[in-house]
Image (cartoon, rainbow over all chains, first blue to last red; front, side):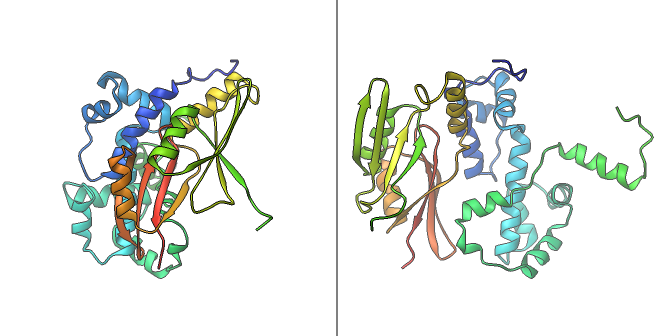
Length: 164
Length: 135
């Protein structure tokens, strides 16, 4: 046990945390407050977010955002549903929040993603759909707010902040 | 067929639990179940697929050291093992049958791409996609 990382988590706990992740996957349009997720996993609210992040490398709320954007991207690609409808169907309370978060995460607007996906039509039915969508999952390794800040810094030219 | 893949194994957290799941809930049957001390070689088989065995193995000694085994148990419990795909004739009927037997579904049957698919996990955390065969 020479590794300096955090203590490894009990597999029984991980299995229960996975259940919370599965439930978000199955219904990412629903609200998933910590209390609800903690209940699914049978852990205390105080420990849930930290345990989830340790297990899956991403805080639960941010994981939910990636799943919503992933689903919205699939609907933009595979259906003719209006963007407003997609926003509400994937769990957003306003079109503005959806559009802004979508751009922050993917770097493109929903309509641009729709146009690109159609231009690059391929053969998606060769790969099971779930696996395909996981392969297209947005890689949200930092907080949306952090991503916004980085983009802003980029636009504003070299940061005046000290690096390191 | 005399050449080809004969066994592919899964890591499971407990042999008896996995055996009960794959046999009683999924309808597989036991192909081989032999022990040598602490070691157990357990494979199950889909009734329609006599040339293929699914191995149900627990990570641990004598094959693996305790730390490696613990890491593998964690990986399985996090659902991080590769996806498995089960093909069925009727996804909704299979879902109803399995659900009634207590299988933990992660996705209800959905019509898409010209077929129907659902998702479930075994007790250890291995994730299966269940896809209706195209006619």
